[in-house]
Image 1 (spheres, rainbow, N blue to C red):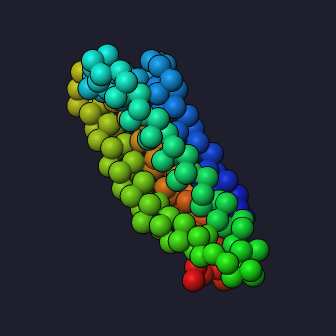
Image 2: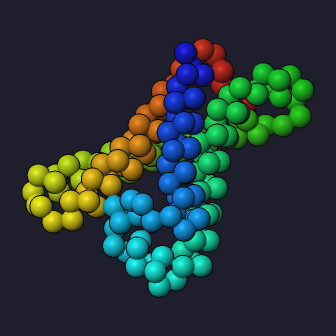
Image 3: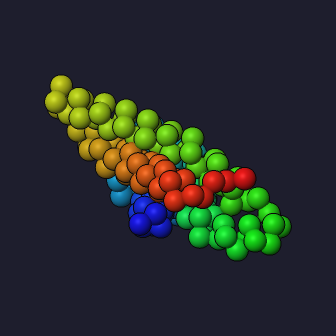
Length: 157
């Protein structure tokens, strides 16, 4: 069951990263839902924006994939006692999951309120619902996986 939540978190993170990678490669679909600043930045400073988006893609991919790999590899690596990397990754994942929940949840609720309150910038608000909803679900799945891993007796050293 634990690995299932790690897998869900991983998949959601990869989806989020895929959009950043798509935009880094020059794609424009749904870029306007991030906000006008994003399209302006890509239009006025394309190389800087693409580089930043590529870095963001790599960070998101690492945040998506490494916790699941760390959990899967912990017994083998712990037995060899050669590295504490899985423990470090899982340790960083705790505050990371909370940050994803808080950021995604606050922005998601803000978008819902914004949609109710005004008809302006609806595409941006829908974008926040989609992207921040993924952040929220990613964080919730990761936190659930970490809690289940701890309850099952795995504790990072």
